[in-house]
Amino acid sequence: MTQPEGFEVSGKENLVCKLHKSLYGLKQAPRQWYKKFNEFMSYSGFNRCDMDHCCYVKKYTNSYVILVVHVDDMLIAGSSMAEINRLKQQLAENFEMKDLGLAKQILGIRIIKNRS
Image 1 (cartoon, rainbow, N blue to C red):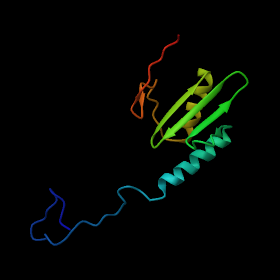
Image 2 (image 1 turned 135 degrees about the vertical axis):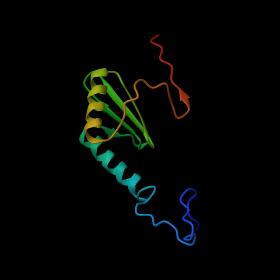
Image 3 (image 1 turned 45 degrees about the vertical axis):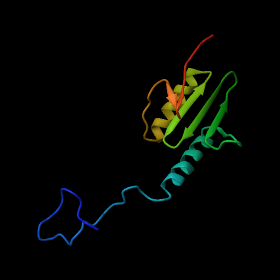
């Protein structure tokens, strides 16, 4: 192992830096995050799809909301904008997140809205 470029100390070339914190977090961190997220979604009344465990659906009297998660991306679709906004507000209160607005592309798939 050698000293990182730009951090070389002359006379101490044999020494290296001690890493005080892991670069990528714990190996179980993604699993723990998903476990917490799944509990939140269940508590919020969403049902996880049997065929795809990253897809959650909640049916209301006259509407529905679908949430799909892939790694660090999330797509929310539904028939009621009020319910979508309520879900986004609840998510923001419980998780650190950014709302990027209307989806234009996800997982390499371009999304084009057409009302007709």
